[in-house]
Length: 378
Ligand SMILES: Cc1ncc(COP(=O)(O)O)c(C=O)c1O
Image 1 (cartoon, protein in one colour):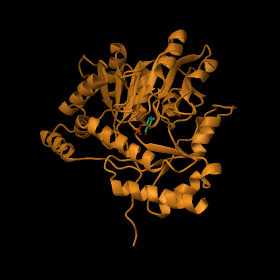
Image 2 (image 1 turned 180 degrees about the vertical axis):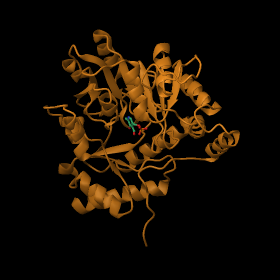
Image 3 (image 1 turned 90 degrees about the horizontal axis):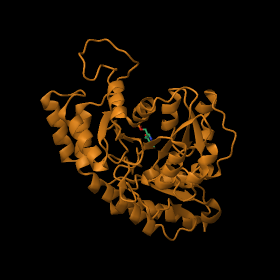
Image 4 (image 1 turned 120 degrees about the vertical axis):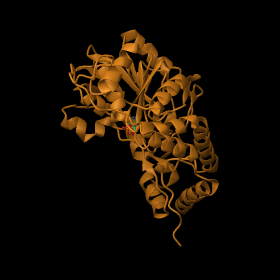
């Protein structure tokens, strides 16, 4: 008999999401002007301790708007984590801004602050940080460098809703921060994004740009002074995300619990390690990610991936470093360096199924299959 398929991630939607969605539907407010957008913007930014919030279509355009708000120009350079998804690099490249990659820390997998300064030139105009898999970056150290060179920080918190750095919420740690509400994210509406900032000028620019550069306070006379976008977020989506936001603490608790169970159950597998959890961090474990040292485990990451999939358990490989992305090369961004930590993470890492609703028997089955593979090789 085929065992039940366990997806790597599933949205956890309950009665409140349906209720708010139907409320938005019944109200007729199905585009961006609607009460759920405003509620989400006001309450999520307050939760993060930030003055302004703006909902947008997704996490990638959220970063693009941050780039535009900071008025980054073609040929400018921005420090980025080399080990990351492509999203931040795309957002920069839309404007001809050059991502300058910095390798990851060995333990947290986030951008290594100690390697940032050597990459700063007179073209550097900002630092982008990403709290990978829910673990906040070492922000004090990064802020120190940003202050020294007078650089703004773009904080990509797409994977870290509710995470904390020294008791400060992710989303409050940069000059402009961004979130994603894609289906696999901690808080979701299928697609969606948020931009937060304490800077009124940035906020107004983001509101202006995301809505076709219609004048913010003037008449809707269809006269446009600047190049804008439709990066709006619908009230229908906001209704779902707002319901998720009200349950964020619970959603995070469940993810943290899933991670705890994995760690405990996989403790005896030598050569299988987890992302380190630093004292300064409240990691919300967006995903339970592991590394496989094949010299010790006797099996590679690829073999584990294949074995689990054969047993109807889906996993996902970790990100691929910017230096290995063909699109950067295609756009003339030449990176002639080595990124040993990124390579190790890309080659040996994967994340296990991580959803709030993953139950004990699912986790036991996943762990059991990892042990079966381990036992056949040891
Ligand atoms: C770190 C990071 N930044 C940005 C994004 C982009 O978000 P979206 O898929 O909503 O465009 C994602 C996820 O997809 C992400 O993981």
